[in-house]
Length: 141
Image (cartoon, rainbow, N blue to C red; front, side, top):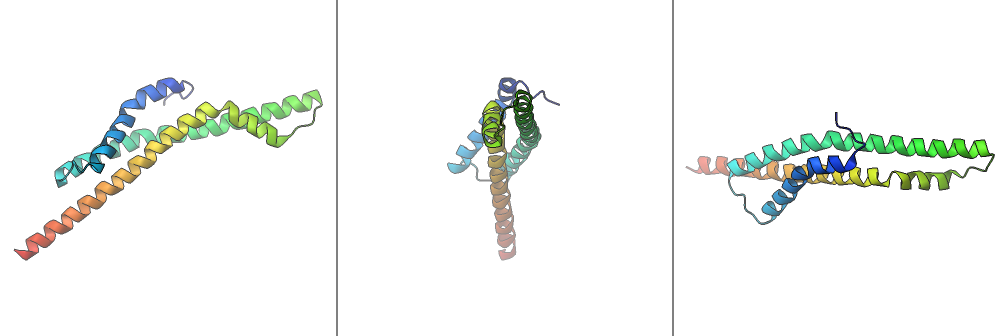
């Protein structure tokens, strides 16, 4: 499992995957891919990227939620020990601020997971269309 405490190292490790997703999105927009073989290769590569990003996104999500809860509870306990009034809304905002870097990293991963899903779906649609088109051509012969 990857140590999610070093967010810079995680981003650095997965930056090539992010770059590929960005690149493939641009290439699809430009209509560079045209054959079923190209779309199949792209689909396989995107599925591989998705499989590598999704678990990390989930770990970051859970870690973010856990850290936020821990911060909130630490503020509540500290407030109680000092005999001060505890304002949950304020503590919640402060806890969110403390984990903002985790939240931003998680959002980045989740964004690429979402883009991968869209690109995968697009490739699947094209492959389905190409298969139907090929079938119709063969029936016409």
